[in-house]
Length: 599
Ligand code: HEM
Image (cartoon, rainbow, N blue to C red):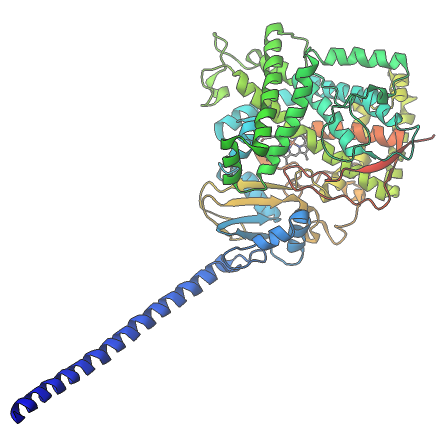
């Protein structure tokens, strides 16, 4: 028994000894595995924290939190996006900044060398890319503004041919001067019985430029300005009929205007189609701009469900389609060779570019997309709408900010007037037969525009601080290294910030925040352009703005006529709020009172 008991005891003891040993080694193992896991997790976490740290990758980013990146700062500064990014560059010596928003990483630069790299030396490696295309696709399809590669090259080649013709330039001068003398100046005169009436000159210019670009592009006059109400302090088209505000008491002038407008506007489009187009285009443009402000999946779902702003876009596009189909079909039927608008010029292209016998464009001109086909109506529509998109609001922005700055700088305004006085004086020695008339209706000729060196400098200086296109985004088509050593991976967005560049002391000197048009003039008072890579207001390189020269003609004609004929005073306490979009405008409009200038 004792032996048995001893044996049992022994077994028990042996078992517990064994058990004790097993438990101890199990705990040790457990502890080891646990510490290993905790260690791995900590290292992983530290790695993630580092990876999401602003300085990861050797390029310090905008202020950022782990994981969400700069998103909180972006949201906080969304009402002053350009001012904020400009301050960031201002506060440090970094010229190319990494921007991290949740999981996406992009780069923004103010370095002229990097701008040169992405816009010229490595042009093919930095297209607009697939990220940009879907936003504008509904409005302008694959028009020049919204495509890359051979399709872009084809459009650029054809459009460059059309844009360099002197007859197109003369056509623009005629349209702009007719709009100024027939609508813009009379509209401002109409506010004269109430000199204290505050008007939104930006809205007036938007209507005016819509008329000009439509006539220039489609040969059709939507007469937005004729029907615009003056005192509406917001951006956008106004189609309310208020013809009395034109104030055209002078019968002779009305006849003259009608006569010229008739010659310009060949397309006789029914009023309801034009008016629907004007509203539809405005709506479509606004909704397209809003797409940039929400995540892509959001507007895609709304589009799929056809609700909210995306429904507005669809309806707007239907009206645009209706109008473009009408004018294109009408122009094709009539084939009027006297027409000078872009539509007619594009329709006549096969005569300009060597065409095959069946009327098709040659493959080397057409590029792979259009090989063997003449330009389809929808393609023509995309190209032409791109011109309206590219040309209208940028000019409105250029003139609006310039007018505002002149109100703040009477010295500069006086210098502009001095230059114009000299030009008007010169008319006495000119034997131009229209001199008298031109003086009466308050407009200027192309030859006179060419003499306006100071005004050219004023506009360039104003767009330095307030560029109509404040930033431009490209997309890296392959892994690359920027001139400053920044590593860029395929698919990354790289943008230049023209707004911040115009305010950078290291580019423009310590007086960069001052309004000094004289910096653009040489010792003989002649305008000297800046290096386009330090001043990419019109972009630079192969994709530089095609309408740059026309834009200056339009802006100078508008500015000269406005300043020569009227005095503008800002509404007390007026401060512009900058819009955040492709084109920078004033969110609250430019609110001024006007008075005929006495001489
Ligand atoms: C102050 C006025 C203007 C400014 C600041 C301006 C600026 C620009 C900029 C920055 C671009 C490049 C956009 C991009 O690629 O994303 C551009 C492109 C373009 N602009 Fe202008 N623009 C102005 C007026 C005009 C006018 C009046 C026209 C036509 C009449 C015009 C026609 C074009 C065209 C066709 C393109 C596309 C060029 C291409 O991609 O090859 N622009 N413009």
